[in-house]
Image (cartoon, rainbow, N blue to C red):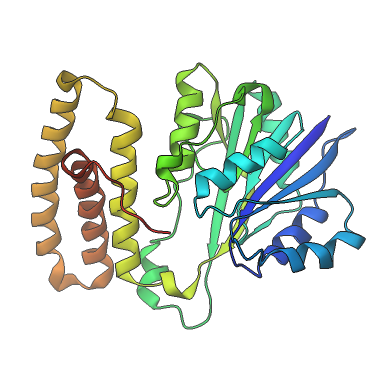
Length: 295
């Protein structure tokens, strides 16, 4: 049994730490691992890291280039080069727990799942603003292991190669993000079982340029817009109308609550502001028909 661990990289020296963590993984009994790295930098900034780590690396590393700046294209290049029975995804700014792969696989077997999504635990650099940590603005929602879900991300994931069945990531999400949520929602709609695993986790240190309310707002708008795109773009007007109407009324309510929380400090104010930003993004997609570019 072969596991293909895939990651895309773009001008990140942290790639070395990610690869080191994969080299130290405990793996399922009787299995082997291959690592697929796709460099989305046309200048091949990751090549020197691959050349440095390869001679002592315990697994075969396939290094490929996708010069077109598009995260979906880079992920598709990963799939093109992955030859395993299972495909795992991790990001180049993350470090995998030593039992990451084991826990994902054990959960897939126990719950007869086609895809399993683990936890991403955020860590922060020195001098991170206190309101960022106190507010938990980079925390992800946790669920009980085995909980069925209808979509997920590529930052801590294991999926059965047969379930992918030549499906690709949509290039329209390539500069905005949300390509993974769309990809796995399509797998879900095809009847594949997606579950959550609390025990499998990676850590991710948040980059300093993201530790501001402007980044958080833009991210929430983009998340809201991409949600509307992959969930409702192909729905009939009769199904879209109640969704849009509901979100307009909720946005008006959340905007009022946001203003009322202004005197109570950044954490409470920003929590409601980001709720409103997500809601606005859900509505924005229908009149703009374009996803906000973040990359």
